[in-house]
Length: 167
Length: 167
Image (spheres, rainbow over the protein chains, first blue to last red):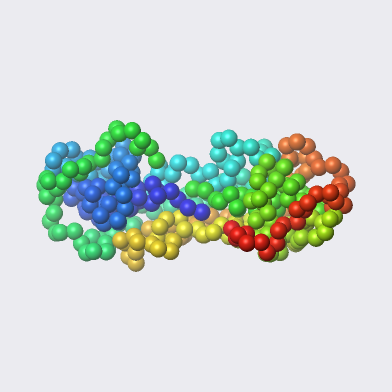
């Protein structure tokens, strides 16, 4: 049983942003910190920005910052936003051809299990999992670094409204 | 979030066997009822047989039958047997390279959510989800059909001990 990389990266990006506080962060910085693809993170950032979890500050000294307080961001909400679906088995998805559809009692039990999973995640917010900068391998970001320090970086904000940025 | 097809098919095969009661069933019959691959079901049947959930009766009139009472088969146990892992995100899997490993509080929360999921499944057994033969689209199996009726079928039991039969 897996979550998509999209969910994994969305959670990591929010944790990184929360850890940075008011400092503007860049996608390149998150990609480097976690050693993951900038292209994937760009799509994740677009989704998080459109949903208000991140705020994009445009321009050469721009970057990303949390769009609301970490206490307001429930882990369950982020996972529900980022996962394409919770179609545990065929009968939860479109195009289902299972011979038992309509009379199957398994789907109700699996649905109950998914609810338990999500209820647990809903008990926690980003504030509960915000790391400190020194929790990142490779050490903390330079102290006092601000968005202005990113002036020479391109792609400091997500390519908003680009094609193919859905989860 | 998905379960593997292996888990889906394991649950369906057990439901089909439970529905048949003492009658011997064949892999071909299950494949036809659910319109799924006989090759995949063969691997599933091997795993279920090795674990004692199914019993294979060999020979030309052979087939498969539940290895224990449906009340003894917990849904959570079947899913734990069939899923290769519950590595929701990278840090649960081998080869993890996440920069936060060791100090991350997210993994504990995801672990708690997986436990909630499994605890819910553990409340139910195969007896709770056993369909009646008429629940299958295409109507019930012929009444009174026994393993002997399968005499002309090849591959009526799983190819036990074949290579590549792991989940």
